[in-house]
Image 1 (cartoon, rainbow over the protein chains, first blue to last red):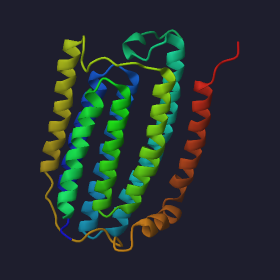
Image 2 (cartoon, one colour):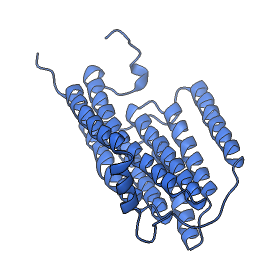
Image 3 (tube, each protein chain N blue to C red):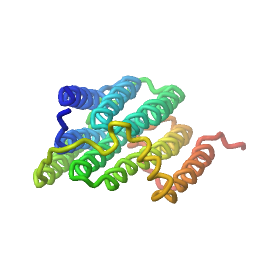
Length: 109
Length: 166
């Protein structure tokens, strides 16, 4: 098996992070922003996996396992965040009948 | 062979990530994101991280995206604005900021030296055993904390999304 250089994985993570950042900065629909955020979270996971791969290549097995565990923790936290975030969008929609973030410029309640 | 699978999965991930952020139909966005998650699971599998590939499919593709679809159908959003529409300044500065972030990260990556060698330890037998062992010995506190976080987010999501009695 020819190993994949971990820099390729890092470059893919960078490209995905950039795409997600463009989505977060340019979209105005809250769910679309949230989807872009998920892409950014996944690219962070991919970066963790890339460095776990680097540590494994260099022979640090325990550290590589810790890197993979971090990805596992991030996936769990992202699932919790998705539940709370989508519940917030439902609450926003009840308040204003829209989830366009430009319409949420009030800080009164 | 492994390299080709990685490259194809990476290309699929990038193309569908772009589709996920530019398409106007929110259902298409979510289903494109599903393809991105499958491609990333394939990449994890190719890298020898079989546990992460399974987690990616079960948690992201199985749970998070179904939640997204539920909410989109619940809110009945017909179509979304075109990307960057009506805000030319926001579009320009947003694109510039994203490109700056990506450039900075690429410059940081170029500082690293690529290394070639063996795959992950224990990858012949799978990574489930070493990861599970580490999870219940050296990372027990974080593991238990995750369950507290999940309960808290469950209660929080219920409180936020329920209809208030008036």
